[in-house]
Length: 200
Image 1 (cartoon, rainbow, N blue to C red):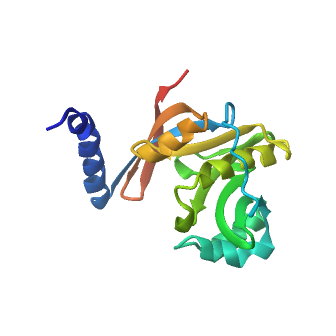
Image 2 (spheres, rainbow, N blue to C red):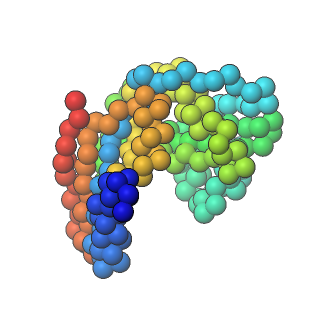
């Protein structure tokens, strides 16, 4: 076995164990709470055909069709509740979006109300046809700027602990991990979230 494979073996074993336990009704979710936008990398030049900005109720049909499995009723409810959606268009075609909740850190294992200058970023998605073109960091960096114009200065998200690509993506944006947390749920009847580590 190569040293690289050996290095990642414990993580693979843990992921497999978590998967097996979930089938048995024991849900274990290690995740990182992340602070973004403090040292964000400036976005590259925006291609002329790209238009970036906040979306609204008039974009509901496009939002529902952009990402497979989207729930139109949920999207409509988010918009009605004041959750913001920042999107990217190629000319008129919607090709990427991310949600920005100014009211709540709405990920249930880490739920909390937010202060006036805080915002929770979640559910980002890019059209697969545009993957590998730097669209996600462009949208994230432009989104930070647009949210600052709305008085937001503290940007938060979470990352599943074993989602290495997502962790690397946020590191490249200058994000920093605040806490390593563990959520445990038993048979849908009991749950608890605990903090395993706080990062300086």
